[in-house]
Length: 403
Image 1 (cartoon, rainbow, N blue to C red):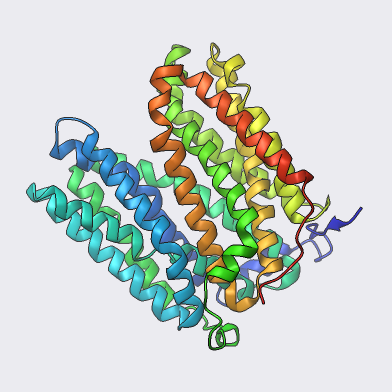
Image 2 (image 1 turned 90 degrees about the vertical axis):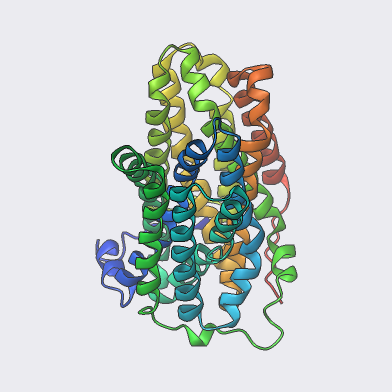
């Protein structure tokens, strides 16, 4: 059976040092961290903002939904734009615009301005920089040696989980100490830092597409299978996120919901590192399918773990361990099948799939929690995703590339 090479022990035991010493990597890491932190901060900041401007959480949900859908809708076109034009200038301009949009939204929140204007601003704040995560991920290929790319992508996953662990904490402290408007305004700071860092990134001019090579549709056709499975993974995460409080309320420990989500994030980072330490049987696409299958089966145990807070915490942590390999293997598959001049488009499509999947899991399935119970919904979602992953794993792989 074929084996995907992920083991980097042959690099004289210093793959991390090789990554850190790669020209431009530190600037890339700063830009990536600054671009992703607002995405992690925005949901909670917008929940507090909506609550401050209304009596309930309807506006909060509308604001979070507008931001998420803005990202998901705009990401493919934004990724194609980065592939076609100067990546540094496009990234810097989009991130700077994001910072200004969040500052404007903070002013609207602080002055009790119009709801419609606020929704438009946060939707644009999601849409304008939507290509940044995919564009920055695609640039990583040009910054590090191919031999250490799997470990670099693993480090990228850890960086992402740090953002999702740190972002809500920063927002919560700021809102408690200052105001909801300050929480929204703080979101602009990392975006501004990322915009400045993006201007100092190396320009991969050799990867610029030829005329007519920026179309999204051929990439979408090639990646349809991977994108569907990426969306399925995020549906599961969306369900786990909105179900955390009711699940732990049922076990008598509602305050542990935040800890469970943190355990999931830590597990994801650890899982990606462990995956990158050795070689695994099969190709990257098959590995991602199998990891998603196991993840779905783990989540399906929620109906059994429901009465026990410790069991639920363990479930979230173990589920995260399998998300790490799922995400990393899927990214390595994209790196393999996408030409250099289509990678920003491909990774932006993946980002869009993440947004749509999370929106389905967190917004559309949330009403079922009250009707059927959190444990039942989580278990059903886990079984559905596991069945989807099993079907995908049994299908023949398509080793094609974009033409």
